[in-house]
Image 1 (cartoon, rainbow, N blue to C red):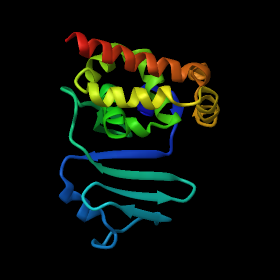
Image 2: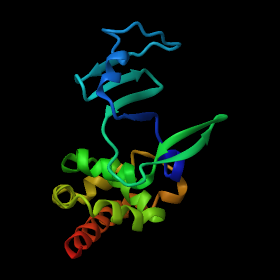
Image 3: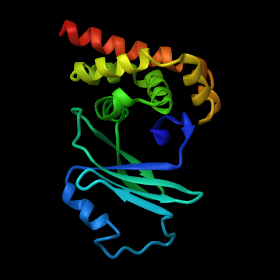
Image 4: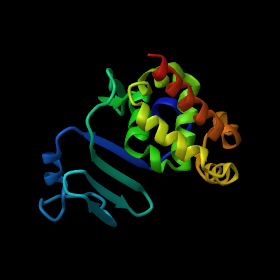
Amino acid sequence: MMLQIGHRESHDVDIFLDDSQVLGFLDPAKAELSFQEAPSSYMGEGARFQKFAFEGIGEIDFIVAASLTAVPTTSFFIQDRTVELETIPEIVVKKIVHRGSQAEARDVFDIAAAARSHRSEIVEALRAYPDQVANALDRLQALNPDFVSGTIAQLMILPDYLDLIATGLTSTIDVLENALDESKQA
């Protein structure tokens, strides 16, 4: 998301896989892996994810999760290579479906930032998941707005998005309410 909308700096990379068998090849306990920079820690959960943390650099998460939208990826040119990145609606839907009921301030900020340029596509994509949207909405409405703003303020936010420190929670709640309303009308 950071590469596509430029809302904050992030030192984490999520790589989504559709085949859990691939994780076996990424488990340092089972496979011989060679790193230019050795991870400071790693952890995994069977067939669901593998996480590598690199001290002072960031994390790489390999997550098994099927695509949830009709158009899940888009081609992007990064360092002389064309790669497939998940679309903004796909990223937001995965945030809501997979961790909406435990959404964190970072997720709130990301969704609010994404909605600035992709609101209609996000709302449309979320319509297919009314139960998960309702759960996420319950979670967000129960949060203390001052705590959320304070936590968002600790992110490495780029200048054009600083206003979302104060408005991110209400903006994200509005997006989710809109998606839920539209799913009821469908």
